[in-house]
Length: 221
Ligand SMILES: Cc1ncc(COP(=O)(O)O)c(C=O)c1O
Image 1 (cartoon, protein in one colour):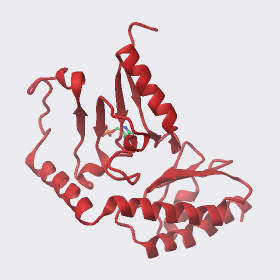
Image 2: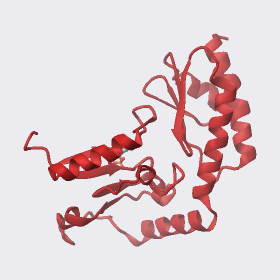
Image 3: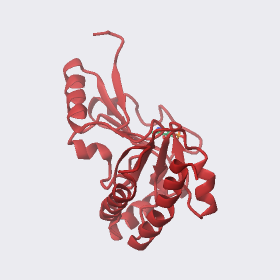
């Protein structure tokens, strides 16, 4: 009831926070609360957006339409571009020219973003993210879920986290020695963000290299 509150900003799946998926009912309830209080409902899809979770936007999976949505990482396939999308009353806050940046909206980066979107459509990469994500999670469940020290395996599409009961930053270097680029966030969550073009056999290789590594790490070998 604080009159100074004007908006809520939600990350549908926390990236740096350790791959925590915001419950869909929670997202819908939050959107409804925002409507009742006339707050803007804004979502940060810098990590989750542009197909990472198997839909264009993770927020679609909860069936809510945000007033503001921000994008970056996947939008230009590595070419640095970010975007802020606004609709309804949120779109009236800025007028063209109000909030420019020197390099914002340049033709080079926009061409990279357009090419990204076109290739994602023509190569069916949303479906690939869903299918390969299911394969990855199923393989991790089979290989790791029963292991003492594995707290949870969670995620959506090709944004997957394995939470361990102990700090595991050392795994990054061990994985690199096997040719795997992984990441550890929140101290004890292995974060996997494979490219959306990853193929079935490459997921198999990821599983066969990563699972023994995690098992050895947990067994202290
Ligand atoms: C979820 C999320 N939001 C925002 C940002 C910041 O984006 P930028 O580095 O484009 O300012 C990041 C960067 O990692 C992020 O992961």
